[in-house]
Length: 347
Image 1 (tube, rainbow, N blue to C red):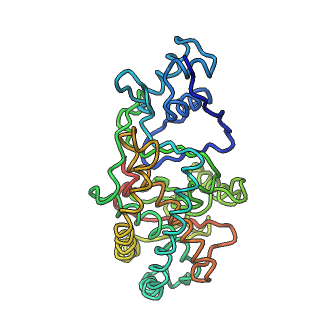
Image 2 (image 1 turned 45 degrees about the vertical axis):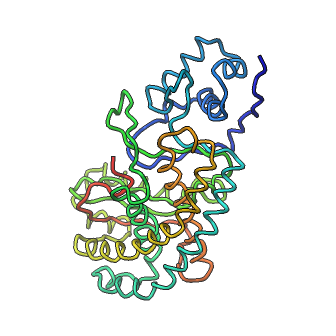
Image 3 (image 1 turned 90 degrees about the vertical axis):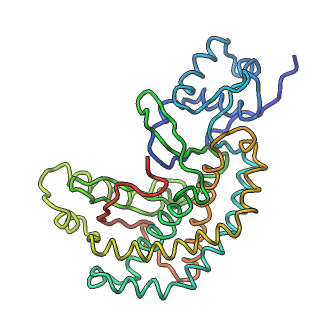
Protein backbone atom coordinates (compact mmCIF):
# COMPACT_ATOMS: atom_id res chain seq x y z
CA UNK A 1 0.00 0.00 0.00
CA UNK A 2 1.38 3.41 -0.98
CA UNK A 3 1.23 5.87 1.92
CA UNK A 4 0.39 9.56 1.53
CA UNK A 5 3.45 11.71 2.21
CA UNK A 6 2.62 14.40 4.76
CA UNK A 7 5.17 16.80 6.21
CA UNK A 8 5.89 16.77 9.93
CA UNK A 9 4.46 19.47 12.18
CA UNK A 10 6.52 22.43 13.37
CA UNK A 11 4.81 23.02 16.73
CA UNK A 12 6.26 26.54 16.91
CA UNK A 13 3.96 27.39 14.01
CA UNK A 14 0.80 25.69 15.30
CA UNK A 15 -1.65 27.99 17.09
CA UNK A 16 -5.12 27.48 18.52
CA UNK A 17 -7.90 29.88 19.37
CA UNK A 18 -11.27 29.45 21.07
CA UNK A 19 -14.33 31.70 21.29
CA UNK A 20 -17.10 30.55 23.56
CA UNK A 21 -17.51 28.28 26.55
CA UNK A 22 -15.52 25.07 26.71
CA UNK A 23 -12.21 23.46 27.64
CA UNK A 24 -10.69 21.21 24.95
CA UNK A 25 -7.11 21.84 26.00
CA UNK A 26 -6.58 18.75 28.14
CA UNK A 27 -7.45 16.60 25.10
CA UNK A 28 -4.72 18.12 22.93
CA UNK A 29 -1.45 16.32 23.48
CA UNK A 30 1.25 16.63 20.84
CA UNK A 31 0.49 13.14 19.55
CA UNK A 32 -3.20 14.01 19.16
CA UNK A 33 -2.40 17.27 17.39
CA UNK A 34 -0.30 15.24 14.94
CA UNK A 35 -3.22 12.88 14.46
CA UNK A 36 -5.62 15.77 13.82
CA UNK A 37 -3.25 17.33 11.30
CA UNK A 38 -2.87 14.08 9.38
CA UNK A 39 -6.61 13.41 9.39
CA UNK A 40 -7.08 16.95 8.07
CA UNK A 41 -4.76 16.06 5.19
CA UNK A 42 -6.96 13.08 4.35
CA UNK A 43 -4.81 10.28 5.73
CA UNK A 44 -6.53 7.00 6.51
CA UNK A 45 -6.11 5.47 9.97
CA UNK A 46 -3.62 2.90 8.73
CA UNK A 47 -1.48 5.71 7.28
CA UNK A 48 -1.69 7.74 10.50
CA UNK A 49 -0.66 4.75 12.58
CA UNK A 50 2.27 3.97 10.28
CA UNK A 51 3.55 7.57 10.12
CA UNK A 52 3.30 8.05 13.89
CA UNK A 53 4.70 4.59 14.65
CA UNK A 54 1.57 3.56 16.57
CA UNK A 55 -0.26 0.26 16.68
CA UNK A 56 -3.95 0.27 15.80
CA UNK A 57 -4.80 -0.13 19.47
CA UNK A 58 -2.57 2.78 20.46
CA UNK A 59 -4.10 4.98 17.76
CA UNK A 60 -7.62 4.16 18.95
CA UNK A 61 -6.57 5.02 22.50
CA UNK A 62 -5.40 8.44 21.30
CA UNK A 63 -8.48 9.14 19.16
CA UNK A 64 -11.08 8.37 21.83
CA UNK A 65 -10.32 11.48 23.96
CA UNK A 66 -10.73 13.57 20.79
CA UNK A 67 -14.09 11.91 20.14
CA UNK A 68 -15.14 12.47 23.77
CA UNK A 69 -14.20 16.16 23.45
CA UNK A 70 -16.22 16.45 20.20
CA UNK A 71 -13.08 17.42 18.29
CA UNK A 72 -13.33 14.47 15.90
CA UNK A 73 -16.26 12.78 14.20
CA UNK A 74 -16.67 9.55 12.25
CA UNK A 75 -18.11 9.43 8.76
CA UNK A 76 -18.27 6.24 6.66
CA UNK A 77 -15.54 4.63 8.72
CA UNK A 78 -13.20 7.63 8.38
CA UNK A 79 -12.35 9.94 11.27
CA UNK A 80 -12.18 13.69 10.55
CA UNK A 81 -11.59 16.82 12.68
CA UNK A 82 -14.84 18.57 13.59
CA UNK A 83 -13.29 22.04 13.76
CA UNK A 84 -11.40 24.41 11.47
CA UNK A 85 -7.81 23.41 10.70
CA UNK A 86 -5.82 25.52 8.26
CA UNK A 87 -2.40 24.73 6.79
CA UNK A 88 0.34 27.29 6.21
CA UNK A 89 -0.46 28.21 2.61
CA UNK A 90 -4.15 28.58 3.42
CA UNK A 91 -3.36 30.68 6.50
CA UNK A 92 -1.31 33.16 4.50
CA UNK A 93 -4.00 33.40 1.83
CA UNK A 94 -6.73 34.15 4.39
CA UNK A 95 -4.52 36.60 6.31
CA UNK A 96 -3.73 38.56 3.16
CA UNK A 97 -7.40 38.72 2.18
CA UNK A 98 -8.54 39.80 5.67
CA UNK A 99 -5.78 42.41 5.86
CA UNK A 100 -7.02 43.95 2.63
CA UNK A 101 -10.63 43.87 3.82
CA UNK A 102 -9.62 45.50 7.11
CA UNK A 103 -9.12 48.81 5.31
CA UNK A 104 -12.88 48.98 4.86
CA UNK A 105 -13.45 48.60 8.60
CA UNK A 106 -10.83 51.25 9.36
CA UNK A 107 -12.43 53.67 6.89
CA UNK A 108 -15.84 53.26 8.56
CA UNK A 109 -14.45 54.00 12.03
CA UNK A 110 -12.43 56.91 10.63
CA UNK A 111 -15.49 58.43 8.95
CA UNK A 112 -17.54 58.21 12.15
CA UNK A 113 -14.86 58.98 14.70
CA UNK A 114 -16.12 62.49 15.50
CA UNK A 115 -19.63 61.19 16.14
CA UNK A 116 -18.24 58.42 18.34
CA UNK A 117 -16.27 61.00 20.32
CA UNK A 118 -19.41 63.13 20.79
CA UNK A 119 -21.17 60.09 22.24
CA UNK A 120 -18.32 59.55 24.68
CA UNK A 121 -18.63 63.13 25.93
CA UNK A 122 -22.18 62.34 27.09
CA UNK A 123 -20.85 59.76 29.54
CA UNK A 124 -20.28 60.52 33.21
CA UNK A 125 -16.87 58.97 32.75
CA UNK A 126 -15.87 61.83 30.44
CA UNK A 127 -15.55 64.08 33.53
CA UNK A 128 -12.49 62.09 34.56
CA UNK A 129 -11.10 60.80 31.24
CA UNK A 130 -10.71 62.22 27.76
CA UNK A 131 -11.87 60.29 24.73
CA UNK A 132 -8.24 59.92 23.63
CA UNK A 133 -7.48 58.35 27.02
CA UNK A 134 -10.01 55.55 26.54
CA UNK A 135 -10.74 55.33 22.79
CA UNK A 136 -8.65 52.17 22.47
CA UNK A 137 -10.82 50.40 25.03
CA UNK A 138 -14.18 51.92 24.08
CA UNK A 139 -13.75 51.80 20.31
CA UNK A 140 -11.27 48.95 19.87
CA UNK A 141 -12.59 46.64 22.56
CA UNK A 142 -16.28 47.47 22.71
CA UNK A 143 -17.05 48.29 19.06
CA UNK A 144 -14.47 46.83 16.69
CA UNK A 145 -14.07 43.63 18.68
CA UNK A 146 -16.96 42.36 20.77
CA UNK A 147 -19.91 44.28 19.33
CA UNK A 148 -18.82 43.65 15.73
CA UNK A 149 -18.57 39.90 16.42
CA UNK A 150 -21.85 40.07 18.32
CA UNK A 151 -23.54 41.58 15.25
CA UNK A 152 -22.10 38.97 12.91
CA UNK A 153 -23.34 36.11 15.08
CA UNK A 154 -26.65 37.51 16.35
CA UNK A 155 -29.49 35.31 15.14
CA UNK A 156 -27.13 33.57 12.72
CA UNK A 157 -26.99 36.79 10.69
CA UNK A 158 -23.70 35.83 9.07
CA UNK A 159 -21.80 33.54 11.42
CA UNK A 160 -23.55 30.28 12.29
CA UNK A 161 -23.84 30.02 16.08
CA UNK A 162 -21.05 28.45 18.08
CA UNK A 163 -21.66 24.69 17.81
CA UNK A 164 -22.31 22.37 20.75
CA UNK A 165 -19.12 20.55 21.72
CA UNK A 166 -20.05 18.41 24.70
CA UNK A 167 -17.33 16.69 26.69
CA UNK A 168 -17.50 14.56 29.84
CA UNK A 169 -16.46 17.49 32.06
CA UNK A 170 -18.55 20.11 30.22
CA UNK A 171 -21.61 18.60 28.53
CA UNK A 172 -23.09 22.04 27.77
CA UNK A 173 -20.01 23.43 25.97
CA UNK A 174 -20.56 25.66 22.90
CA UNK A 175 -17.59 27.24 21.19
CA UNK A 176 -15.82 28.07 17.96
CA UNK A 177 -12.38 26.48 17.74
CA UNK A 178 -9.63 26.73 15.16
CA UNK A 179 -6.06 25.60 14.61
CA UNK A 180 -3.79 27.40 12.17
CA UNK A 181 -0.29 26.83 10.88
CA UNK A 182 1.70 30.04 10.58
CA UNK A 183 2.67 32.99 12.76
CA UNK A 184 0.96 33.94 16.01
CA UNK A 185 -0.19 37.23 14.46
CA UNK A 186 -2.23 35.24 11.95
CA UNK A 187 -4.75 34.59 14.73
CA UNK A 188 -5.34 38.33 15.09
CA UNK A 189 -3.23 40.29 17.56
CA UNK A 190 -5.91 41.83 19.77
CA UNK A 191 -8.37 40.18 22.11
CA UNK A 192 -10.41 40.66 25.24
CA UNK A 193 -10.58 39.15 28.69
CA UNK A 194 -13.95 39.32 30.44
CA UNK A 195 -13.95 38.06 34.06
CA UNK A 196 -16.93 37.80 36.42
CA UNK A 197 -16.56 40.01 39.48
CA UNK A 198 -18.01 39.16 42.91
CA UNK A 199 -20.81 41.70 42.41
CA UNK A 200 -23.77 40.90 40.11
CA UNK A 201 -23.44 42.21 36.54
CA UNK A 202 -19.92 43.58 37.11
CA UNK A 203 -16.94 42.41 35.03
CA UNK A 204 -13.25 43.01 34.84
CA UNK A 205 -12.77 43.88 31.17
CA UNK A 206 -9.35 43.94 29.49
CA UNK A 207 -8.61 44.51 25.81
CA UNK A 208 -5.32 44.55 23.94
CA UNK A 209 -2.39 42.45 22.82
CA UNK A 210 -1.62 39.23 24.65
CA UNK A 211 1.74 38.96 22.92
CA UNK A 212 4.31 41.65 22.14
CA UNK A 213 7.16 40.63 19.84
CA UNK A 214 6.24 37.00 20.45
CA UNK A 215 6.37 37.24 24.26
CA UNK A 216 3.47 37.54 26.74
CA UNK A 217 2.31 41.08 27.47
CA UNK A 218 3.79 41.39 30.97
CA UNK A 219 1.94 44.59 31.87
CA UNK A 220 -1.41 43.05 30.97
CA UNK A 221 -0.59 39.96 32.98
CA UNK A 222 0.47 42.02 36.00
CA UNK A 223 -2.78 44.02 35.94
CA UNK A 224 -4.89 40.86 35.86
CA UNK A 225 -2.82 39.33 38.67
CA UNK A 226 -3.24 42.49 40.76
CA UNK A 227 -6.99 42.44 40.11
CA UNK A 228 -7.27 38.81 41.26
CA UNK A 229 -5.15 39.45 44.36
CA UNK A 230 -7.35 42.33 45.45
CA UNK A 231 -10.56 40.39 44.86
CA UNK A 232 -9.26 37.35 46.72
CA UNK A 233 -7.98 39.47 49.62
CA UNK A 234 -11.53 40.01 50.83
CA UNK A 235 -10.74 43.62 51.73
CA UNK A 236 -12.51 45.17 48.72
CA UNK A 237 -16.22 45.71 49.31
CA UNK A 238 -17.43 47.24 46.02
CA UNK A 239 -16.39 47.93 42.39
CA UNK A 240 -15.67 51.59 43.11
CA UNK A 241 -13.05 50.78 45.72
CA UNK A 242 -11.53 48.12 43.47
CA UNK A 243 -11.35 50.49 40.49
CA UNK A 244 -9.61 53.15 42.56
CA UNK A 245 -7.14 50.60 43.90
CA UNK A 246 -6.28 49.46 40.38
CA UNK A 247 -6.34 52.97 38.91
CA UNK A 248 -8.67 51.95 36.08
CA UNK A 249 -12.03 53.33 34.85
CA UNK A 250 -15.34 52.25 36.37
CA UNK A 251 -18.11 52.07 33.76
CA UNK A 252 -21.44 52.50 35.53
CA UNK A 253 -24.76 50.98 34.54
CA UNK A 254 -25.87 54.28 32.99
CA UNK A 255 -22.66 54.77 30.99
CA UNK A 256 -22.66 51.13 29.93
CA UNK A 257 -26.17 51.39 28.51
CA UNK A 258 -25.37 54.63 26.69
CA UNK A 259 -22.21 53.22 25.16
CA UNK A 260 -23.99 50.02 24.16
CA UNK A 261 -26.27 52.14 21.94
CA UNK A 262 -23.29 53.82 20.30
CA UNK A 263 -21.45 50.53 19.87
CA UNK A 264 -24.55 48.93 18.39
CA UNK A 265 -24.93 51.64 15.74
CA UNK A 266 -21.27 51.60 14.73
CA UNK A 267 -20.92 47.81 14.76
CA UNK A 268 -23.97 47.56 12.52
CA UNK A 269 -22.07 49.56 9.89
CA UNK A 270 -19.09 47.23 10.23
CA UNK A 271 -21.24 44.13 9.86
CA UNK A 272 -23.02 45.60 6.82
CA UNK A 273 -19.61 46.08 5.26
CA UNK A 274 -18.81 42.43 6.02
CA UNK A 275 -22.09 41.40 4.37
CA UNK A 276 -21.23 43.40 1.26
CA UNK A 277 -17.98 41.44 0.90
CA UNK A 278 -19.34 38.12 2.16
CA UNK A 279 -19.34 36.42 -1.23
CA UNK A 280 -15.60 36.96 -1.62
CA UNK A 281 -14.92 36.05 2.01
CA UNK A 282 -17.06 32.90 1.91
CA UNK A 283 -15.32 31.76 -1.28
CA UNK A 284 -12.09 31.55 0.74
CA UNK A 285 -13.72 29.09 3.10
CA UNK A 286 -15.11 27.02 0.24
CA UNK A 287 -11.57 26.53 -1.07
CA UNK A 288 -10.16 25.42 2.30
CA UNK A 289 -9.65 21.71 2.96
CA UNK A 290 -11.69 22.01 6.16
CA UNK A 291 -14.50 23.55 4.15
CA UNK A 292 -14.97 20.18 2.48
CA UNK A 293 -15.39 18.04 5.58
CA UNK A 294 -15.91 19.99 8.83
CA UNK A 295 -19.60 20.63 9.61
CA UNK A 296 -18.89 23.69 11.78
CA UNK A 297 -15.91 25.26 10.05
CA UNK A 298 -17.81 28.12 8.36
CA UNK A 299 -18.69 29.84 11.64
CA UNK A 300 -15.17 29.27 12.91
CA UNK A 301 -13.71 30.62 9.70
CA UNK A 302 -15.81 33.80 9.92
CA UNK A 303 -14.83 34.28 13.56
CA UNK A 304 -11.13 33.84 12.76
CA UNK A 305 -11.34 36.07 9.68
CA UNK A 306 -13.06 38.83 11.67
CA UNK A 307 -10.37 38.68 14.36
CA UNK A 308 -7.67 39.20 11.75
CA UNK A 309 -9.59 41.97 10.00
CA UNK A 310 -10.41 44.03 13.09
CA UNK A 311 -6.87 43.61 14.47
CA UNK A 312 -5.31 44.97 11.28
CA UNK A 313 -7.97 47.72 11.20
CA UNK A 314 -6.84 48.85 14.67
CA UNK A 315 -3.23 48.97 13.46
CA UNK A 316 -4.31 51.06 10.47
CA UNK A 317 -6.19 53.50 12.72
CA UNK A 318 -3.16 53.72 14.99
CA UNK A 319 -0.77 54.36 12.08
CA UNK A 320 -3.02 57.19 10.88
CA UNK A 321 -3.01 58.78 14.33
CA UNK A 322 -6.78 58.28 14.66
CA UNK A 323 -6.72 55.74 17.49
CA UNK A 324 -4.21 56.07 20.31
CA UNK A 325 -2.96 52.67 21.49
CA UNK A 326 -1.37 52.83 24.97
CA UNK A 327 2.31 52.05 25.31
CA UNK A 328 1.35 48.95 27.32
CA UNK A 329 -0.75 47.78 24.34
CA UNK A 330 -3.81 47.10 26.52
CA UNK A 331 -6.42 48.82 28.68
CA UNK A 332 -8.67 47.58 31.47
CA UNK A 333 -11.86 48.75 33.15
CA UNK A 334 -14.50 47.55 35.57
CA UNK A 335 -17.65 47.34 33.47
CA UNK A 336 -21.30 46.94 34.40
CA UNK A 337 -23.25 44.70 32.00
CA UNK A 338 -26.71 43.30 32.56
CA UNK A 339 -26.16 40.34 30.24
CA UNK A 340 -23.84 37.66 31.55
CA UNK A 341 -22.07 37.16 28.23
CA UNK A 342 -22.27 38.65 24.79
CA UNK A 343 -22.47 37.39 21.22
CA UNK A 344 -20.00 34.68 20.33
CA UNK A 345 -19.10 34.26 24.00
CA UNK A 346 -22.52 32.90 24.89
CA UNK A 347 -22.09 29.32 25.98
